[in-house]
Structures are given as structure tokens and as C-alpha cells.
Image (cartoon, rainbow, N blue to C red; front, side, top):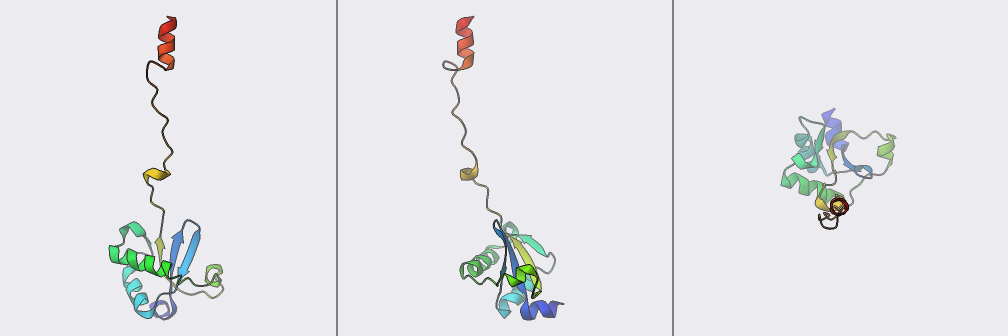
Length: 114
């Protein structure tokens, strides 16, 4: 089975818009076989910087395989899956409402009426 992956394997990248399949070169397939030797699915956060750069470079070079692989028509062996989840940063969190001061808040109005 690893011979099939070595000869024609693809790497699945899970993105926010769905899975994408990358066709690496022969040497890259050897590297990916070593990288996924223990786990079939790896989050991008656990990869080394060099591994992350390799995935980013393959994605930026548009080395995607046609959608026939996604439908299972050609059944290319999947070497492994990288989960690319968007980082949760401060910009994705909703903005907080400004803190209401006691002088203009409901508590101040209740105190004035008492």
C-alpha cells in the first residue's frame, strides 16, 4: 500500500471551504510518507515551520488535483491529511460593548429615585 502512495499519492488539506488535494513531487511524497508515518491526520499547528512552509508553498503554487479525486472516481491513495483551521484571533471575536459608568447607568437612575 505504501508503494501506491509513493507512486501516485496525494495529500488532503482540510480547509474552511472543504478538502483540497495536492499532488506533490516524488521526493515530497517520500517526505510526506515519513511525516504521516504515525498519524493519518495532523493539525497544521503541530507541524514544524519547514513542514508548514511546504504545505503553504504547495497550496500557493496551485498544485491542486482535479475534483475527480474528491469524488473518489480515480481513487488516488491519500498519503495523509493536514487540517488547516483558521486561527482564532482577536479580530474574529465580537467587539465588547463599552462599560457603562455608574453615573449614566441604570444603577445611578435607581439611586436618584430612592
